[in-house]
Length: 83
Image (cartoon, rainbow, N blue to C red):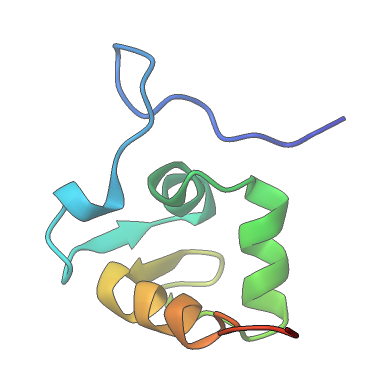
């Protein structure tokens, strides 16, 4: 079964990360998955592999700085390829 994010708004559309303030804090894996249009398991894998930065706010609570997450993902982007 594919783990896709649920719709972020009542209109059923996914949020656009470009529309939010880049310094916004996103609370929880599900909210970040929704913002990025990624699966929940993908977000959890990225966090476990330390590919994206996060802030532990409690025993089980986690939040993300959207700007830092986007920068981390941008740094993972592969440029070019074989010709």
